[in-house]
Amino acid sequence: MSIKHPIISVIGSSGAGTSTVKFTFDQIFRREGIVAASIEGDAFHRYDRAAMKAEMARRRDTGDLTFSHFSEDANLLSELENSFRAYAETGKCRARTYVHDTEESERHGVPPGHFTDWREIGDNSDLLFYEGLHGAVKAEGIDIAGYGDLKIGVVPVINLEWIQKIHRDRASRGYTTEAVTDTILRRMHAYVHVICPQFTQTDINFQRVPVVDTSNPFIARWIPTAGESLVVIRFRNPRGIDFPYLVSMINGSWMSRANSIVIPGDKLDIAMQLILTPMILRLTERSRRTK
Image (cartoon, rainbow, N blue to C red; front, side):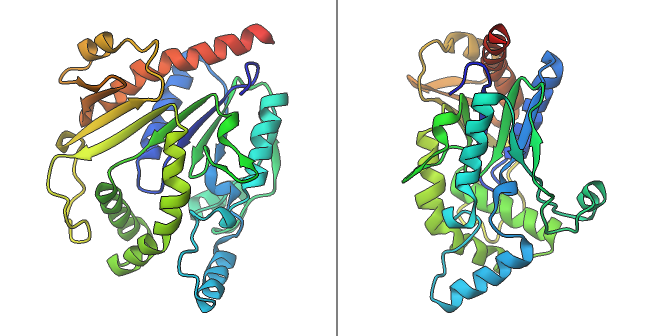
């Protein structure tokens, strides 16, 4: 952790809702005049799109049916840890961008499915903001979690996560339900061993729970709406959290445990604003005092 150069990590898999959380953070940064350097987790994938397909085929030929972007060896985790370390020490680090589509290709001048060159980011920034799959990994020889000053987990219950992924990949990527199902099955080993353990390292988890039937996510015609969901917010260390204030400010909320509050799904944005804004301000004010 770094007082002078703080790091915020948002951890969640594709379809978990991390993009919504990132939007809320962007709102807070803009409103409070905070300059954030950003890192996207897919920038630290080991392979570009074509190379990943080739590596997956090679693994399948050797009997490995669990290799995916979730896997540790599919990512440059040492590079990510080095970037976190460098930012914590100097306020600058190396990053790059993975180009997903034609629109991003025109912006970066790199074909879709490829990476931009590495570049230095962070000059004159207040903090580093990471959003991706591996921002709180703690494994043999790797301790990315140790550099995060505020770590946020975005964790819908698994059937909802699958529904969101199936609908997104079919709509935006043209995949069939069968193809997305194969991806889910291939990722399960790493989901259990790499993704889930990170949520014990996070400071706050936001877990969306549908209150409609999601028992068979592979035939679900619609994604449950925010109004058809609850969100469980769990604090690893509840000390200093003013739960009575939060319950009074968020209509329909209640405490389910000494470290957890449950809110209506459509109150997520206001809950995040109330909870995260003072935490972010404390990090940046403490940082600015040391500079």
